[in-house]
Length: 216
Image (tube, rainbow, N blue to C red; front, side, top):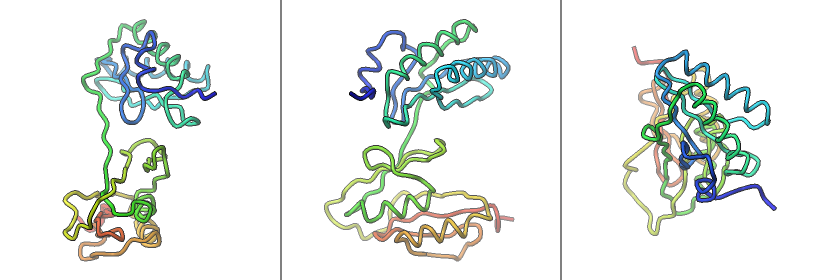
């Protein structure tokens, strides 16, 4: 029996009214109003997470704290997320902090492809991503958006209308480019290097690897 639960099951659980399930997990935004109050909440979240050995992603900013819950060993939500969500909400209330679902959002990117399995390795190498649930690619550091792949009925000959600019450390650019090329990509242009290189997967979807260099 798996511990994994659906989004509906999460929302139907008691005590999770502060939380909203998005693409990448169950999220809550707590309007702390000050950085010091945010630090206090993060410290309490850390204590609670360590007690149960279940650790959320936490983003601390001046006006508030965003928390994301996701159970990695089931690649989805679980009852452990429900339990920790309740505890975090209770800790926020004890600190006089209210939740606000308005600022919550996440996004992913979709690549149209005739044969997604052929182009997926290119995008994994380009972004430094790994395979996630449902054949998507995900950032192993939990920072960037997920990348999905949608099957096209017919080939597209024009350039893609949207592309990614991937900013990397200047001393990592060559390795990242080499990995993307080895994964089936091709170099489109080096005209603006080292500010950016234009690459494409084997179906012509373009992306740029960028650095700070060459922008003076």
